[in-house]
Image 1 (cartoon, rainbow, N blue to C red):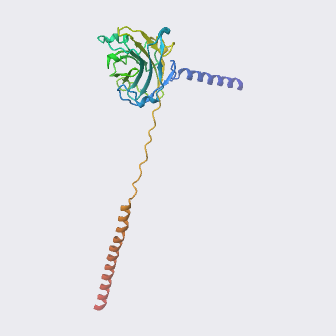
Image 2 (image 1 turned 90 degrees about the vertical axis):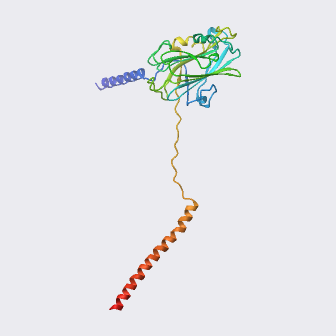
Image 3 (image 1 turned 180 degrees about the vertical axis):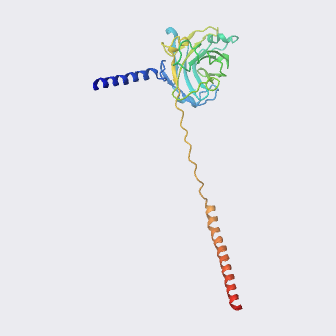
Amino acid sequence: MKRILSLAAAAMVLIGTMIVSVSAEDIVVVGDQFKTAYGTPVIDGTLDEVYGESDPYRIQFGKDNAESYSTAVVYWAWDETALYYYADITDDTVSTEADTTNIGDIWKTDCAEVGFNVTPNQEAGDPHNTANSGVFLGALMYGSEMDTYGSLSDCAYVCKTVTTDHGWAMEVCLPIFGEATGLTPKSGDQIAMYTILHNDTDNDNERNSETYRDEVSIGVQYDSSKMDCIVLSEKPVIEIAEPVADEPTEIDNVQTETSAPKTMDRGFVAVAACTMISLAVVVDSKKRR
């Protein structure tokens, strides 16, 4: 009987362990993980030191093994209000004459596309349509204007594009956290994301190449199960120094030492005066007797 009870207890423990593992909220079914940095960079198109703690995300694989006319290294950062995105793009045929009359055609020129899903555990599918996702397309010739999709695409983003000595760069602030969205970030959170490049090599407003991170990620913009993910890094610990009591200065010590005897002298004089008066009274009273 004891043996049967022991086996039953062991089975219950095993089942409980399996249930906990399967229902754990931190399981994210996405591709590779990349650490973000923590901090608030200035959105000016230059790579701030803040991004230094971010794992580089490299985009260099041409669609269907086609030639890639541009490559990029992408960095992420985060704080309590926003995600930050920086793409350093290498391109020796930067578009300079794009037709910018239609924002919907932004993908036809030199363009960086970034998408994300803040709650990948709860939803999957087309990032354009899931509940907590956003897709943003920016291009050098479009300046600060972006084409956007998804439920979080209405955020008051800030985009800055600049030319570099090897192509161009794009930096974006995506303020998706806070009361407006009800999303609160914390260290360790995983956010599904992707980024791809579109490239026009001859200024004819026709895309000549499409570049992904690897072969597996082709088509990622329509299938969040193919996304990689960023992991929000730990916030740095700020040590607050204990307040130090002020030590008396040399001048304070001198004043204390010189003033003390004066106080004692006055007290001595007062006591002596009282004693003399008392003696005088006693003597006087004896004389009268």
